[in-house]
Picture 1 (cartoon, rainbow, N blue to C red):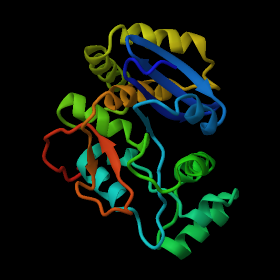
Picture 2: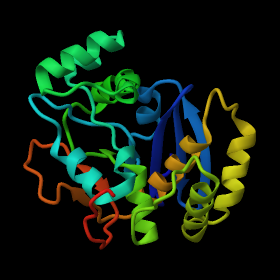
Picture 3: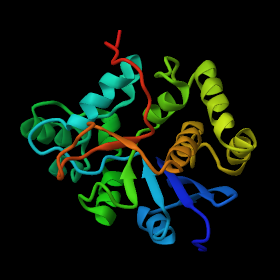
Picture 4: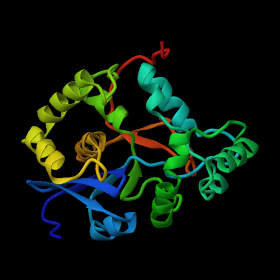
Length: 239
């Protein structure tokens, strides 16, 4: 891969493994990888890889980055999943994992968070607990909020929500609508969902930004953080 131009990747977990939008200089493409190691090795010399997966798991309480991201997103804070602790992420049975998580963190574990346990471990095997490397944790809804100037109230699974997000992507990325349509045609729904395509696209757009902000705004050196483009909106109450 040539390093003559900036290369960035937005990656989202999907049923087949990982769905990626790659912006390689003037070329934009989508692709899938079964394992995160395949993706990270292929793009080891990329400028940035933003991934919608937790990096650094909670130990005794919920991660501050998740709590503050949920506050920032207001009514869309429900899109923030509180990840399992390390031992819960390694348990395949949901109820056992939830019980273990409650013992360690003091809260039960959502089914959605449990479902991404394997993907969390895949990324952890690659990056460990390094939070400022090429691979960084991000969140699509924070990135869409940055493009919109405020959080988007509509779910991306609804027609209005999908339409607005698509317009925002099209404002930032040449032929974004065509890229989305082609991806919908190229991949089966049981392999890649429409939400996965939208999320990977916005993560790639965010990854183009050299200066990203984080939540929490000033994390300690060993504290997990979520990267996103800066936007100036009030903290909402979620109602």
